[in-house]
Image (cartoon, rainbow, N blue to C red; front, side, top):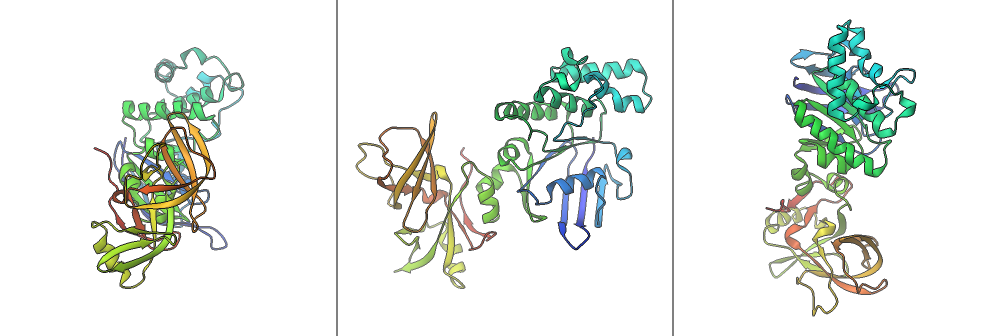
Length: 379
């Protein structure tokens, strides 16, 4: 295995469209990096530049300390797993997995050993004589993974490999890919638009938008301390709620005025918000759905003085949990992720408590930077 180094990489297409803008990242040996972002953010283009399938406009890419800018894909010692599996339909699973080794004129006994070992690891040893059309989507993806594994490459590249699978199989294959990474100790770059995949798989997550890296950090760091509003809203299921409002000072106590009620700003956030208010009192408060507390039947009141009256307009049961959709006079869609319980009536107005120790404050705008965050991982 080997490290991967991208330094000030740009990709500009004919006509001036900038797909990747000044991408710089050091990927350590044996690290699992996930590139995540909405469609068109440049993540797949970045992966294809690492693979050599896309020419870079400027910057440098090195694998294992060797500059790769002008090295053809076949000589980069990487293995790529595609969304479409890219299996040869006329070949058996064994032949598909062995094909690259045959091109290297490797001895047949060694090829058989490598394929059988990879097939056993992936649980497809009994499928090696079958052709792709005889396999399920999950089995085809395992064959594609096996084809990559047998090559013993310096780096594995995954381009949305689970997008064609159903939800249950995606979860299973996600665990399989992580297990393989831990077992093989492989340097891995994984592209996905699924933020849940990004959080569960990556040692570090790179969040991209419009060709620009907005944050690169561990998954919990990104989740609990997002760099800006875009990152905060992209990672998390359900996504973070954003409440636009103004900062007001009443006798030295700061409040966040949502428009329908005022919420006391906690002491930990006050210094940063006072500094922000010196230039502009408009800001956005971010609240994760799990930081909202709904009253249960029989409750005499909310568990916090920081609460907003919200109208309940939808309940989505999820087994032990449920998503409750609410609105205030200023904000039409607020989601709470809470323990499932009965007694909630659609159309009712409830005093919804907000855990102010877990809120985030951002500058206005789609990518407004984080002003204050204290949300920390549970111990």
